[in-house]
Image 1 (tube, rainbow, N blue to C red):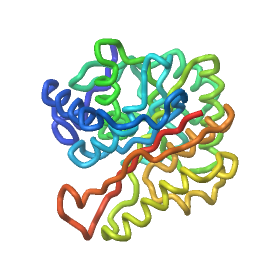
Image 2 (tube, helix red, strand yellow; image 1 turned 90 degrees about the horizontal axis):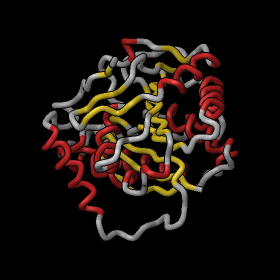
Image 3 (tube, rainbow, N blue to C red; image 1 turned 135 degrees about the vertical axis):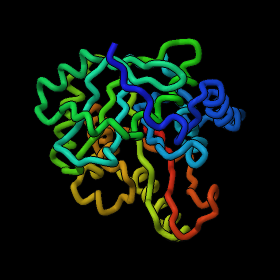
Length: 278
């Protein structure tokens, strides 16, 4: 089996499986007893941050807490490339991703079909060597799965912010996943390296824009100027796909920034989570 090994275990999150499971489970325990926002609604996608877990893990848990993996056949985990720019997207050419909590299978049949219809979907090894956008989502999936296997994933690292390429990618993913019950996981932090007051203002504005803008109006190349987030490409691909299937409603479920952890109020990174549902 060709496995993508964890590359940020021990830095972004604990490399010890017991410690990692305890940490992530602890985030979910903090949420117990909170009212459900989405009773009777189907979760179509989430936005989850991808920073070190001491910074953003609790925020990520606030979106994953609404996910029941038994409802899905395939998880489309999509995030931006942080270290390399390239045409459209790269998907690891292998069978599984691995974290200290175990392996999660890649939907290799879906990957093959996607590559056949979109020449921009490649395997670029350098795009995966240090990339954390996909990997940081996987421990949350393993924990909420419990004793059951996590459904196969379509792990997409996006190397462009070109609007037309993102829309084409979303349409092609929809085509090769037709008939499957899918959950989208868009991996993204919010603003980077502003002072805390400015960061908070920008981040709340970004979350509000996602919540309040109808899907049909959201799909505009100019939206990149209204969203201060590193995972714009992941969000736009997800929104385009969900719009194809009849749209969605969005609710922000959590927000924090790095100043609360490291005490640096001069260069802040924002973290937000959202749930998109029918």
